[in-house]
Amino acid sequence: MLLSLIGVFIPYLGFVVVAVGFILVLMALKSIGDKLGDERPFKNYLYGFVFGLVGMILVLFLIIGLFGFATFHSTSEFQSGISGSEEITPGQDVVIHEDLGGDSFPGLAIIALVLFVIFIIAAIDAYFKSRAWHAMHELTGIKEFGDASMWMKWGAITAIIGVGLLLILIGRIFAILAFNRMPPILGEDEPVQAPESAAW
Image 1 (spheres, one colour):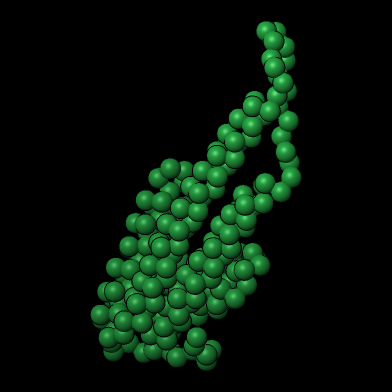
Image 2 (image 1 turned 45 degrees about the vertical axis):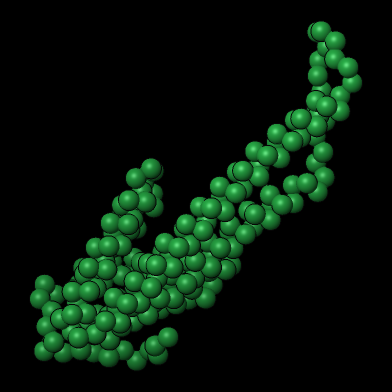
């Protein structure tokens, strides 16, 4: 769990660290689900992982499209500036006038679309992880899982306005704390404290 959090801040290899962290969490939730006979934590976390992976690929394609548009736009402006200039004599300075009108609108639209997709992906990912942590709270009675579910839930709701990303981060920190409080041996005969909060 900690790997998936700190991997975001590692350049170049950060994606690999995040992926390893997600896989380790999935393995842990699968093991817990098998012992307690409940697959909800594993399935919900897996759904969030799949949506996040597909979303990252989509964002990558959008960013590539943005750079491609910017390169094409710059090349077109340069060529039009050269072709539209008067006859150039040796030693004369060439001045290329750029049109700063509405041609930049498609680029801004792509940037806005990328940000929108990022927020939507974060919201969907947080939604499924909130369900996973809520199920873990029901199964283990560990309070931090319930806190993680609550922060993730509100993060999913407010992700579109940006502040939700901070709430999601807080939820992930509570999930890390919850895993640290897990007993070394978890069996079906252990008492479970059902939370009072409503599920998603």
